[in-house]
Amino acid sequence: MAKDKTTLPPTGAGLMRFFDEDTRAIKVSPKGVIAIVLVLIAFEVFLHLFGPSIFG
Image (cartoon, rainbow, N blue to C red; front, side, top):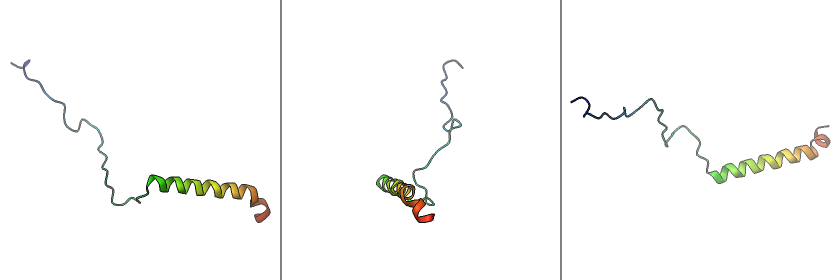
């Protein structure tokens, strides 16, 4: 009788669950992230080119 019984694994199975909704996080769209990165790259290039003359 015991061999005929099939058992399923536990529902949690030791895995972490991640939730889509996090109320404390800042919501930024993918386009916003790309825009921020491009602005930071442009700022760094500007500082690389003109930083020594501005800051001495």
